[in-house]
Image (cartoon, rainbow, N blue to C red):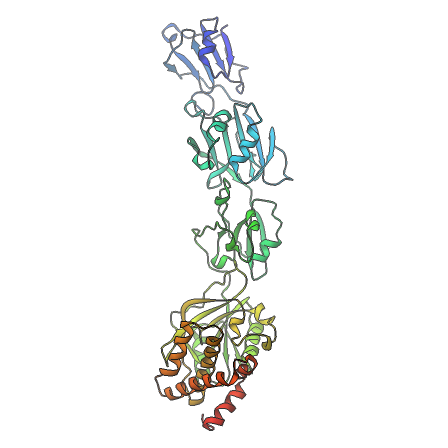
Length: 521
């Protein structure tokens, strides 16, 4: 029988103390119940180091070494089965999850610091690091690295995520190499084990019905590191994100507008008014279409071409609904919200022609507080292109729950949170009669003059100048008359908002026109 040592890191010392012709080096994790420790190599192989494989590696931790030492290795031996794994450090992302390790510790911020905090208190040479967000039912903890990779940090992917949650660690070298390391990704000898993956449990799945993901995130009690939020009845299977450090725990939108989004627990630490308050958002994932197209509501009153324009849009977009003859813009918009079956609706006004390239497929942004979205309109009379007369994507709840118009600003739409989408939606086709041309110019110029007085700016000033000086077409004169009259009306008001709001009453406008120009069509 030859001398035996187990898991020796200092074979030279063991050989120096060896009293026999050979030294057995054995591994305490292997099964030697049927192993012949009396085996001796034939004379022509007596100078070699004999190495027995395990089921995982060519060097399974079993060697027979000549007393005088050797460099040539002989791997031509039968497998010695490895039956036990290393110690296990189990990291818990959820405090109430089961303890499954020799040591169980709470996850704090990132894997590197969590591992260092726990492993500093051990005398382990090797260990497994596992996480409660993964399932290890079929995982083989007898795996071990090759003899050339002993001091590497071995990483096992979680699902498709390369930077997984399972590690095989040489504890002394890990503690040494991470002493002054910024992030775990910088570890100098990372080894990603490509042929073994660990299944991560599915995230919390949260179905929400509000018009903002913000409220859903605020109200969710995160038991797991992430949660998948989706609206409607169609979720999207999310990617597996890395939990190695905070900046890799990204918000991942999966549908346009963030309607379905993967959200890390840490997001709540940053959240104020929008998901974008969180600094790490991954926009690289290909976005699927929104689950439903928003309704289109055609709003008309007495416009001469209302019927013709309605038939055009109804033919091209059959989902179009109609609100007709409702007095007062705020009342018409409220009725539009009532007939809509979607959380937002496109308001299309009868004095416009839809741009061919406009598809009514914009996705409202659920990652922000609800808002209205204003699209551009190109004015065919004076060439201006901005939000006036443009299609507006109105949030139904905001419209239905709006305060009385008397409490709002002069412009109904911008009295709420809005976003201007620089996309051409339609053409202003308002110059269909003397009165209708005058009415549109009067209202817009008066409004621009009011805003210029309240908050002077080059953009308003430029637009107001164009309205008063440039006009083309059959009713160009009435466009200019209306603009000048609108500015005159503002000057009469002395900036009084209630006085200015008279211009939103169709009957008042008609009477104002008649008093100055007579009963023209």
